[in-house]
Image (cartoon, rainbow, N blue to C red; front, side, top):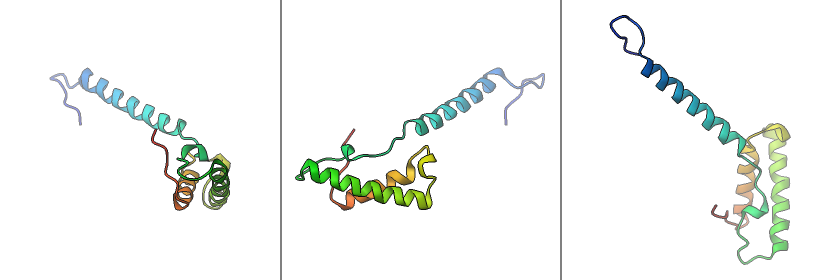
Length: 102
């Protein structure tokens, strides 16, 4: 609840701060959704494996993640790629790969 001045009007500073915080929260939410992309084999360290093995494992994890997303997510219409990325990452980690540090 905002404090009011003697005339009973809400202070301009409090109003401006509230609007600024709301705008900041909205911008953060839009940026978080807009920058989410699907993971690929290129996002993982090669380690002691060959590039061909990494690609083969990546393709297997793509199939697993797509199957899961079709069953439980929004499929290709999911803008966040959240369920897809979680399953893809779990699959690649189960095969011994580590994500590259950005």
